[in-house]
Length: 164
Image 1 (cartoon, rainbow, N blue to C red):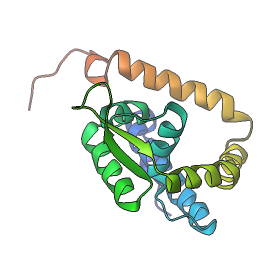
Image 2 (tube, one colour):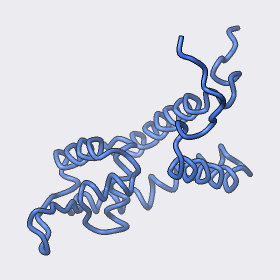
Image 3 (spheres, rainbow, N blue to C red):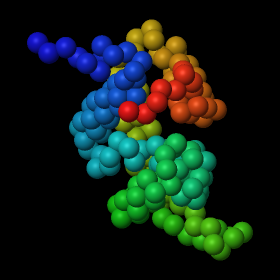
């Protein structure tokens, strides 16, 4: 059997390991979503949740709420617009600002998801994490906060080697 290099390299490959875990969680989440008859991608749900929680938001605000780049948010919003789950209209205060809001069908999807989809996914992840759920969320928040305050490029200032 081949050794799991990513796991064996520890902190050196933490980002790769997080990505691997994230991809696995999203794939499994997608299976649950499809089993419950919903035709949406797992990665689109946080956008709907943000709009449901905070009301109409701009693409920039959505990007910030979900923690991704604005181009990524623009792509997802375009997909949700095409599916009919969100609508876009000019802000009443500033016509240059475009606000994204849930359409009636989008609100139906969120309501259904709150009742059936999200609790099932959350329960499955809680079961996976067991007694680790609170500590792992605290550790993830600490890592995210740490990266926000100082990215890796500003850390680990060992004496710089000459370039090869």
